[in-house]
Length: 351
Ligand code: MRU
Image 1 (cartoon, protein in one colour):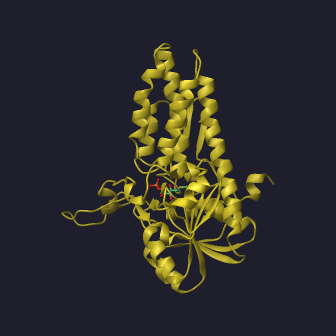
Image 2 (cartoon, rainbow, N blue to C red):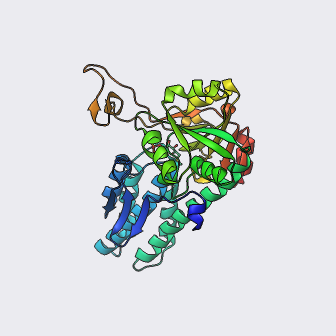
Image 3 (cartoon, helix red, strand yellow):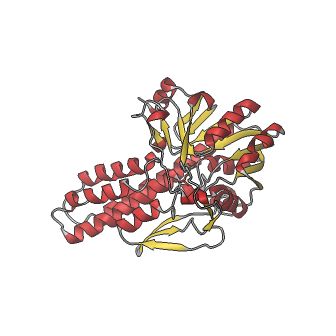
């Protein structure tokens, strides 16, 4: 048995090939397992915007590979000015989605790397840097898996929201990585997954990942979470994040905040699992995190079928902010911050 199988970890959704960047199309899962191959930066930006790939770390990794495609094309077009010309591609990618700071972190890292490159064809070096970003993300997830699993007592039942697994990251997952690691260590008996309206990342993606990796899962409607907690089985709510502010406020998929409120009411612990590439120390609180609002159509319809009457409007924020006061633990690859605040976050970030 390979390491990946032991860790209940068989899925990868972002892959580089010489034909281009291959993404497992997450809009079609679990009904269809179809890959798309992207050959230019516009294609990559559209894939992020249209949710072919989603999840904060996966968006960052994808953008890094997008910069490889951009660098190669710009160098062929103009070997002398490619470093200036590629600025436009950075902007194209930066405008794809606003909330996940991993996107901006990855673009900044590629930009800094590009500035260090000597003259000549950058193709190989850019690919090496993007691959390092990808590999580091998987390593961070493994580390967080081990750290988060230590917080969980044996025979636990946990609840998760959205999809934070291999599909949402370079591989293994953040919150789902902790769940994978804790299940592998015999600490988790059962996982409940919120279906996560309107995109149904829980029903379509988390349930699929857990079934594929043979981890027992039960799906619930988002509105069933309070009743489930009232039954007293759930010990931890475990979620990921798209951006964590310097004071420990956490932006994550819409519905996370309500879970944190009902978890505190029922004495259920609340864990956020995210790599330091998700931490934005430039924002003092969650109030400053830009929250993406997506098309009304996503709420007015379900799997392409209109469900609301004509004439009604919808409000569709994609994320919400959970105040640090409702978070029991933030798990990063650099360590665990219990009851986060600005001083503890600074210490963990090493500044
Ligand atoms: O809109 P999505 O599917 O990109 O939202 C994803 C989430 O909210 C995840 O919880 C978050 O990105 C963490 S993924 C490891």
